[in-house]
Amino acid sequence: MSIFLCGELDAGERQAWLQALRAALPGECIEASLERLISADVDIALVANPPPGSLQGLPALRLVQSLWAGVDRLLADPTLPAGVPLARMVDPAMSAAMAETALWAVLALQRGFFSYARQQAAGQWRALPQRRADELQVVVLGLGEMGCAVAARLAAQGLRVRGWRQGGSRSADRAVPVPVDEGPDALAPLLAGSDIVVNLLPLTPRTKGLFDARTLATMKPGAALVNLARGAHVVEADLLAALASGQLSHAVLDVFQTEPLPPGHPFWAHPQVTVLPHAAAQTDPRSAAAVVAANVRALRAGQPLAHLVDRRRGY
Image 1 (cartoon, rainbow, N blue to C red):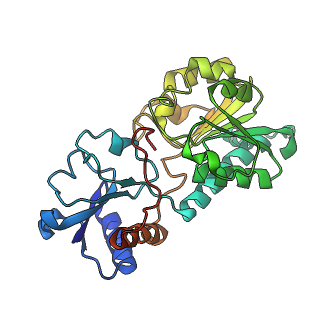
Image 2: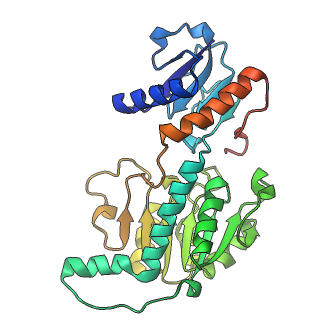
Image 3: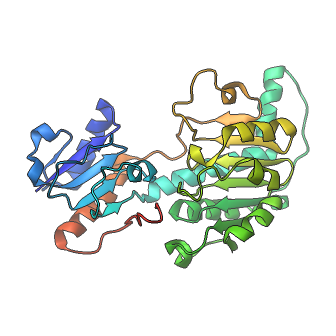
């Protein structure tokens, strides 16, 4: 049996993955080209947003292991083999990186550092009021591995942190380091009382377009949004309108409806928007290969697989 690596990887990324995976799985045949494999022998596919149809014609496939944390694009592919287990990437190193990015964004908002950057560009020297960490409430939406890591890091900084989850998910049994609100009815009151909203929700039909004009209007006036999840969570025109009206003071965005963010997009030059190039928590082959290897060995040994996706829920 053999393993097929496929997806949106440039030559350098592909080589880095092959090197890390072969080191972690020395007894396995791992290739990034089907021409080097016998299709009937491929029983594991390691994927990074592969083009639709990439996994067709693999009759022995027993596991699709995503190298990325999000699987929404995979699930949107109608040719994704039904009945084959799909696992997402859950790498502690990636969760730590996401927590670092969230902490940076929240501290910059708390201390007015984005405002100071604008003042520097304008040649202005003016000290702003300094808010204490315990004077701000931050809500983390989504309490998976990354959400919990972010909530813990922010709480350790002395911020008042709450978490929110949709309810009825497998994450309900996970230990969460902060107070938790649950269910659709709890979201609006929570947003109304929060100074900073950090979004780490999975993208599903229920969460697509969550931050539209209606939701943004429920947020505390002058609040800030940090979106580190998926661009489709945010209706971009509605966000721009909320910033223009003063309903929101700032947005830190790592993800967008169209990526790369097109030239001339209003976000590029907007003084109240900080743009990151989908870099909040990049998958590192050096650590992620160990996560892949654990699932490959479990499959070979007939043991339970980790981090399986519930296709009905979308995560």
